[in-house]
Image 1 (cartoon, rainbow, N blue to C red):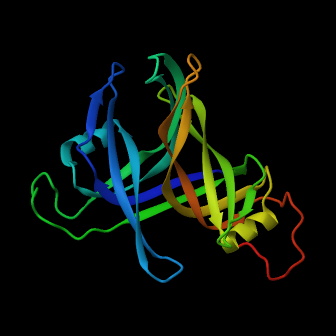
Image 2: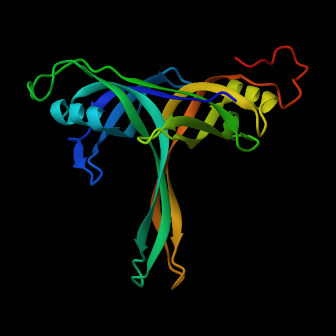
Image 3: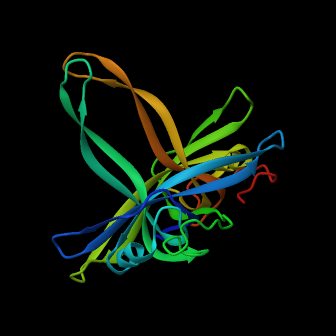
Length: 261
């Protein structure tokens, strides 16, 4: 089975990086960049969508981040996505009851960074041209059958989730695996292709961009039954194109006009 997990972004830091020295003597840098995608809507009008991405870098890369990067610096960075998971305490506003909740988010583990334009540390007030890039490539397997919906607007949308496993060696030289799960959304013609070709277990290469999906949800207190509105968000990949890389798990459609692109 092939696996690929590659992310490439150009954007600006939204705040100064946070640098920490761990007890293991490793250095870690946490930063966030914003990258803006410009596109035309169905009416032909230009729109903008800004995606905020958390990035973590380690050791030598973290030292470079600490030395050169500040808020507003434009950077080109490459790496892979990982799913960060942790437990958090939610406090009920009605009774004060604390409840442990599971949280998760995608972040990029940086492999390489390049500064674009002049360094903000040396030229804090100088304005520079802003470039943007938001690209994600994945090879993995579908963890369930796609969910296909036709919206009231007439648009067709496909929601799916893929798992890709990265193999690496730890500091001791032992081989380790890390599986990243990511939700993927496809629209219209690509959604038709997804419906035609993809089922659970299908190996697929997909290319697209990352977007930050946000919505409101109800948080229920198990102690007093009070519900309150909370903000939720997650990253998902918007599929631009895909290709089946393994043998087909689903019988190919007979319509010759339908094909994966």
